[in-house]
Length: 388
Image (tube, rainbow, N blue to C red; front, side, top):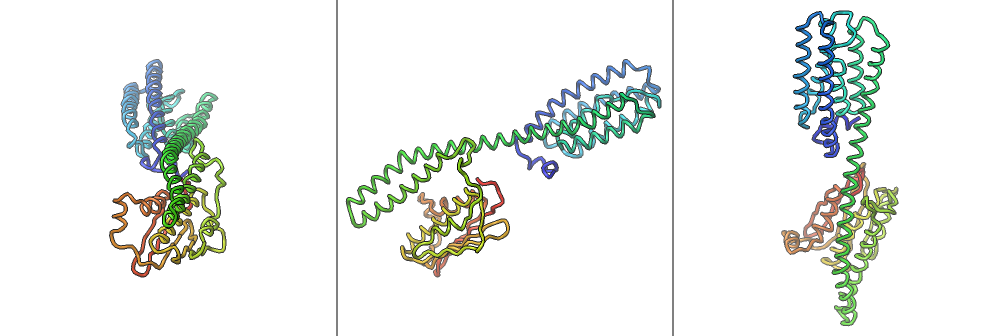
């Protein structure tokens, strides 16, 4: 129901595009029903007690048909005032029928022409709009009649069920179009990740493997460099294998759904690193958990690299309502002013990419507080969202 009342600017592009195509078809229907109404009123001209008033009604129908086609063609004008005006014109023509044709009329002046307003409500507000407009038109049609015949009842019944059915079908088309766009974007993202994984495999992994082998041969500091290169090689290979499990829809084929974030963060606790978590589980989507663990690991890597291998660090996890908060703190000398901007300019993306970039992709914030007494990252990420 909320999506029915959502402003047009906040609807998905696919939904707006589908609605535009439906209004194009509705424009053709308006022209056909107008031609039918004009022909029938000319054929039944002797039934009009006030012929000039009948001509005015037909002219009004033609003018409004052209006006509605032009106005509905602009997505920005498809709002409640236009829909109310469309419905009001149809209701007004039904109400003036007894004055134009007399009390003993059989067919209303607009006839099937009122289907334009009915279907416009159904297209824009889906089944709810079709039901509301159908009820208003049906009640008005019955109100102006002295008696209800079987034919009249059939027309009213079709109005009442036709509007909601068409509205439901329009909503289904919009939903399918939106889902198709999401699937296409995910497939494109998966293909791009696979391409990047191949590039990494062909270049970076081979270099890391070479550094690992040559470092072991050199010994000393070279051996330590080789060990670090070997760790990064294993991480990259794990990432590439993970991408192979991504299907064409962009989701992990073996995605287990919500997982306990505490388990991933607790696995980082080793040596000088202390992890504090809540007593109860902190469930988040599996992709979000993987990204958050990677963010914390990047923070701890910075501590080990810039403060020292044995420098203590603390990781605090907390769940607050619809978000999770993670704090990573150390007691190092802090980060000098301008150092992060300088590193980003040099192409070193440890903070801007591994930390801030990941958190931004999750829709969260990463705040850095640094000084002579240490550095602290405060990471806040909403969890009630679709995993990226």
